[in-house]
Length: 272
Image 1: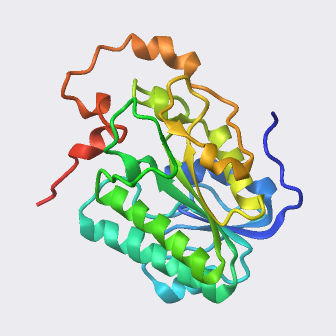
Image 2: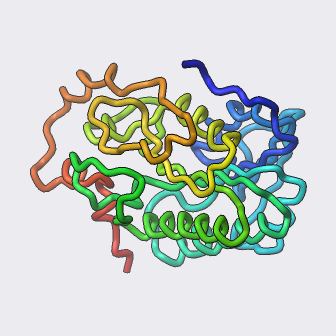
């Protein structure tokens, strides 16, 4: 299989979280998907906008600002918000209130497709080795995981009521390469993630589809058959890194990185 290429680029694609780690990585790779790429974040962009890019900073907690941000947009790749575990008040503004503002702005501005960066932390309390599909009950491991469950539920409701289609990607470990034993199962290459975003943007009739974002690794815990409508298949695998990672010292028996699918997130907090 080859890298995804759209049948016809969108007129304008919005990416939130454009200054974050994944946003910086994805920015150039999303260029073939749209004639204009609108970039948004509160933090400054890492590089000056290219001729096809628009820099439009916005606070996800600003309802009016979000409505303006989605004006004249064909689709959204939503990577904005808090991406790690934090006190609930911090999670609340960007990841809950911000997702509500995103979907309300989409409704009001007529945006019909959103790619939502969900997370494996929506199901983080499943044990490693348990194989689950996208219909498995949510078992969030953190406030962050709860916020991503909220985002998935918001996506479902806005599809049922308003017909706004969403692909929620439960991203595993999106890094240049896996770093530890857990990530041998959760890793997704940047190439596979970009191809998945492409399928999520351009596949017709997705409704609200949940898909696990992981490359084709030997010991994956996640069954993506429920997301077959996307026609996506990963091209990369964690296998080339296995020998080096398995040479690392073994984990302690009580280390959550070796017990739970969400790893150390299950032990993050409390914060007061």
